[in-house]
Amino acid sequence: MGVILAQKGIRLIYGGGKTGLMGEVANGAVSAGGEVIGVIIPSMNTPALAHLGLTRMDVATDMHARKARMHELADGYIALPGGFGTWDELFETITWAQTGAHEKPVGLLNVKKYYKPLLAAMDHAVAEGFIFAEHRKSVFCESSPEELLSRMAQYEHPHEAVKRWLKED
Image 1 (cartoon, helix red, strand yellow):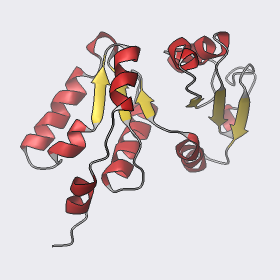
Image 2: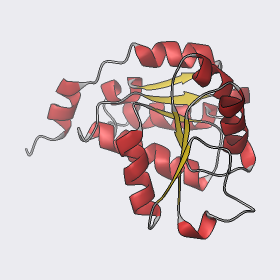
Image 3: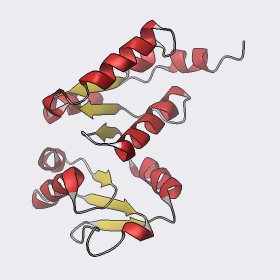
Image 4: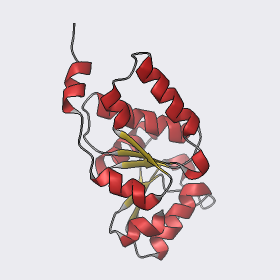
Protein backbone atom coordinates (compact mmCIF):
# COMPACT_ATOMS: atom_id res chain seq x y z
CA MET A 1 0.00 0.00 0.00
CA GLY A 2 2.75 2.47 0.94
CA VAL A 3 4.73 1.83 -2.24
CA ILE A 4 1.63 2.29 -4.39
CA LEU A 5 0.73 5.55 -2.63
CA ALA A 6 4.25 6.86 -3.24
CA GLN A 7 4.24 5.75 -6.88
CA LYS A 8 0.96 7.59 -7.44
CA GLY A 9 2.24 10.73 -5.73
CA ILE A 10 -0.26 10.38 -2.88
CA ARG A 11 1.02 11.66 0.45
CA LEU A 12 0.60 9.31 3.41
CA ILE A 13 -0.76 10.84 6.61
CA TYR A 14 -0.86 8.45 9.56
CA GLY A 15 -0.22 8.10 13.30
CA GLY A 16 3.57 8.27 13.09
CA GLY A 17 4.49 4.88 14.50
CA LYS A 18 7.20 2.53 13.30
CA THR A 19 5.54 -0.67 14.52
CA GLY A 20 2.69 -2.76 13.20
CA LEU A 21 0.94 -2.68 9.88
CA MET A 22 1.00 1.10 9.51
CA GLY A 23 4.71 1.16 10.30
CA GLU A 24 5.18 -1.21 7.35
CA VAL A 25 2.99 0.96 5.11
CA ALA A 26 5.09 3.99 6.07
CA ASN A 27 8.29 2.05 5.38
CA GLY A 28 6.98 1.15 1.93
CA ALA A 29 6.09 4.74 1.11
CA VAL A 30 9.43 6.06 2.40
CA SER A 31 11.40 3.41 0.47
CA ALA A 32 9.58 4.42 -2.73
CA GLY A 33 10.39 8.10 -2.21
CA GLY A 34 6.92 9.12 -1.03
CA GLU A 35 5.97 11.97 1.25
CA VAL A 36 5.00 10.61 4.67
CA ILE A 37 3.69 12.74 7.52
CA GLY A 38 3.19 11.30 10.98
CA VAL A 39 0.88 12.83 13.55
CA ILE A 40 1.69 11.47 17.00
CA ILE A 41 0.85 12.21 20.63
CA PRO A 42 3.61 12.88 23.19
CA SER A 43 3.21 9.58 25.05
CA MET A 44 3.88 7.66 21.82
CA ASN A 45 6.64 9.95 20.60
CA THR A 46 9.39 7.68 21.95
CA PRO A 47 12.36 5.96 20.29
CA ALA A 48 10.58 2.60 20.69
CA LEU A 49 7.40 3.73 18.89
CA ALA A 50 7.95 6.80 16.69
CA HIS A 51 9.10 6.42 13.09
CA LEU A 52 12.26 8.50 12.66
CA GLY A 53 12.47 8.30 8.85
CA LEU A 54 9.41 10.31 7.88
CA THR A 55 9.21 13.46 5.80
CA ARG A 56 7.74 15.21 8.83
CA MET A 57 6.41 14.36 12.28
CA ASP A 58 3.75 16.56 13.86
CA VAL A 59 3.20 16.17 17.61
CA ALA A 60 -0.38 16.79 18.72
CA THR A 61 -1.32 17.45 22.34
CA ASP A 62 -3.82 14.59 22.61
CA MET A 63 -5.81 12.08 20.55
CA HIS A 64 -8.54 14.57 19.69
CA ALA A 65 -6.00 17.08 18.39
CA ARG A 66 -4.20 14.27 16.56
CA LYS A 67 -7.35 13.19 14.71
CA ALA A 68 -8.23 16.79 13.89
CA ARG A 69 -4.73 17.38 12.47
CA MET A 70 -4.84 14.21 10.38
CA HIS A 71 -8.29 15.24 9.11
CA GLU A 72 -6.91 18.67 8.18
CA LEU A 73 -4.00 17.15 6.23
CA ALA A 74 -5.80 14.26 4.52
CA ASP A 75 -7.50 14.23 1.12
CA GLY A 76 -9.12 10.85 1.82
CA TYR A 77 -9.11 8.02 4.34
CA ILE A 78 -8.14 4.37 4.07
CA ALA A 79 -8.49 1.87 6.90
CA LEU A 80 -6.35 -1.25 6.84
CA PRO A 81 -7.14 -4.17 9.13
CA GLY A 82 -6.86 -3.00 12.73
CA GLY A 83 -8.44 -2.82 16.13
CA PHE A 84 -10.10 -0.25 18.36
CA GLY A 85 -7.95 2.70 17.27
CA THR A 86 -8.55 1.96 13.59
CA TRP A 87 -12.26 1.50 14.16
CA ASP A 88 -12.49 4.69 16.21
CA GLU A 89 -10.87 6.72 13.45
CA LEU A 90 -12.85 4.92 10.73
CA PHE A 91 -16.25 5.48 12.30
CA GLU A 92 -15.49 9.07 13.24
CA THR A 93 -14.48 9.73 9.64
CA ILE A 94 -17.63 8.07 8.28
CA THR A 95 -19.76 10.04 10.74
CA TRP A 96 -18.07 13.30 9.72
CA ALA A 97 -18.92 12.53 6.07
CA GLN A 98 -22.50 11.64 7.04
CA THR A 99 -22.95 15.00 8.78
CA GLY A 100 -21.22 17.00 6.04
CA ALA A 101 -18.08 17.83 8.04
CA HIS A 102 -16.00 16.62 5.08
CA GLU A 103 -16.48 15.46 1.50
CA LYS A 104 -13.50 13.12 1.28
CA PRO A 105 -13.58 9.47 0.20
CA VAL A 106 -13.37 6.68 2.76
CA GLY A 107 -12.02 3.26 1.88
CA LEU A 108 -11.37 -0.10 3.48
CA LEU A 109 -8.48 -2.23 2.30
CA ASN A 110 -10.11 -5.63 2.76
CA VAL A 111 -7.02 -7.82 3.25
CA LYS A 112 -8.01 -11.50 3.55
CA LYS A 113 -11.69 -10.41 3.81
CA TYR A 114 -10.97 -8.82 7.19
CA TYR A 115 -13.83 -6.34 6.83
CA LYS A 116 -16.45 -8.87 5.68
CA PRO A 117 -18.23 -8.98 9.10
CA LEU A 118 -18.18 -5.18 9.39
CA LEU A 119 -19.61 -4.77 5.89
CA ALA A 120 -22.37 -7.24 6.79
CA ALA A 121 -23.14 -5.19 9.91
CA MET A 122 -23.28 -1.99 7.84
CA ASP A 123 -25.63 -3.67 5.33
CA HIS A 124 -27.80 -4.89 8.22
CA ALA A 125 -27.97 -1.32 9.60
CA VAL A 126 -29.12 -0.11 6.16
CA ALA A 127 -31.80 -2.83 6.02
CA GLU A 128 -32.98 -1.84 9.51
CA GLY A 129 -33.15 1.85 8.57
CA PHE A 130 -30.27 3.13 10.71
CA ILE A 131 -27.97 4.07 7.83
CA PHE A 132 -28.94 5.63 4.49
CA ALA A 133 -27.96 3.44 1.53
CA GLU A 134 -26.07 6.41 0.00
CA HIS A 135 -23.88 6.69 3.09
CA ARG A 136 -23.18 2.95 3.06
CA LYS A 137 -22.28 3.05 -0.64
CA SER A 138 -19.83 5.89 0.00
CA VAL A 139 -17.59 3.57 2.05
CA PHE A 140 -15.48 1.84 -0.58
CA CYS A 141 -14.04 -1.60 0.01
CA GLU A 142 -11.56 -3.49 -2.14
CA SER A 143 -8.92 -6.15 -1.54
CA SER A 144 -6.42 -4.52 -3.90
CA PRO A 145 -4.79 -1.16 -3.13
CA GLU A 146 -4.93 -0.21 -6.82
CA GLU A 147 -8.64 -0.98 -7.12
CA LEU A 148 -9.41 0.83 -3.87
CA LEU A 149 -7.56 3.98 -4.96
CA SER A 150 -9.27 3.84 -8.36
CA ARG A 151 -12.73 3.65 -6.80
CA MET A 152 -11.91 6.38 -4.29
CA ALA A 153 -10.81 8.66 -7.14
CA GLN A 154 -14.36 8.43 -8.51
CA TYR A 155 -15.99 9.43 -5.22
CA GLU A 156 -19.00 11.72 -5.31
CA HIS A 157 -20.19 12.96 -1.93
CA PRO A 158 -23.88 12.11 -1.22
CA HIS A 159 -24.99 15.71 -0.63
CA GLU A 160 -28.70 14.91 -0.78
CA ALA A 161 -28.34 12.12 1.79
CA VAL A 162 -26.49 14.51 4.12
CA LYS A 163 -29.33 17.04 3.78
CA ARG A 164 -31.93 14.31 4.37
CA TRP A 165 -30.03 12.98 7.41
CA LEU A 166 -29.77 16.46 8.95
CA LYS A 167 -33.50 17.20 8.60
CA GLU A 168 -35.08 18.26 11.85
CA ASP A 169 -38.52 16.67 11.42
